[in-house]
Image (cartoon, rainbow, N blue to C red; front, side, top):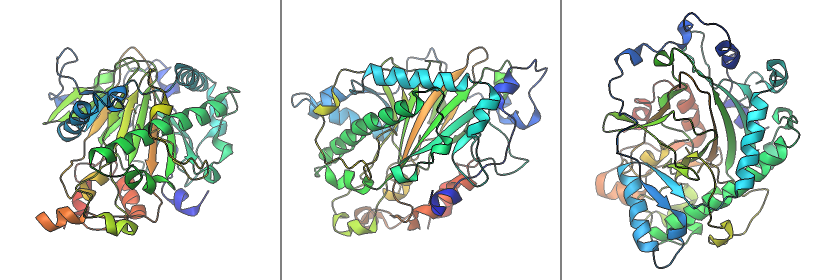
Length: 413
């Protein structure tokens, strides 16, 4: 793996949460206790009838219904930053195989999973993400992270061969979701009056990572968090919700709204949009273009991937569209659109009785890419954010993981 990728990660070793949850805890260890939850009165009940928008990909691809559905899609991006995607076209067989193999991996004995444990200064492997100090509050979760694209960056040391079909399942899953993602990005371009390649081309040399999350139940669930409130630093995120247990929440108007999964749908999170200097000639056209992130993905759909706009597929450079997951983030878009599209905070809460599993897939441009506001918006309102190197942006994002509310302030002018 390249030095650039390695330098962005690294995590101090901590106790395994799955093993900890299996003991007779009289209380939660202090490092997991979130005192802010004691005054957490801004959570909307799951019985509330307010739900995030639902978008139908088959209607986006249908000439008769595309106009209305594109309008709904644009509104969802502006008002929520999240939506659920129906009829996406990934086969039930591929989804179910990925789910089963992931569940089987987390059922392995701890010592066997540790074979694929994180190494110093590496973002990959089994453990907990981005633990930077001994004082840092910890998340009630374990994870296994893999770099899947570019292929040359794959480190098979971290790819389990038990279950025996695990590697094949991850490979197939990531490729199929990529097709859906690129399709959606192309449709976004169409919605902006652009050729699809205007938005898809910058991702030809992207970095893709897949993060498998295991959130054990906790009898003291009102004291812990599975995922700290944050806005993702990736451009595209997709989360496949593996076992239909609620936990994902998004923040809107100061309230935390639970994302209630629809069977067979992706929960899509509008993530960061990146602008490359090599696209100077396109700046005048891109009035706040964005790329989305799918957040919590759940089952299957009926729209075949082949129905999406065609593109040239190069397995060595083409990104996998897993950040569709389903849910993983939107910080960059705030810089890129000069503040027009806002970063959406989200978090994961813990169920007192049931485990929760999810798969998040992230897509990023090359480490050397430059992020900057779109020129059209700068002309109208003046630049509100600095131009920043992608590598610097990611490093700052990781270092500020537990302080996402003030993260973007570092880039304001």
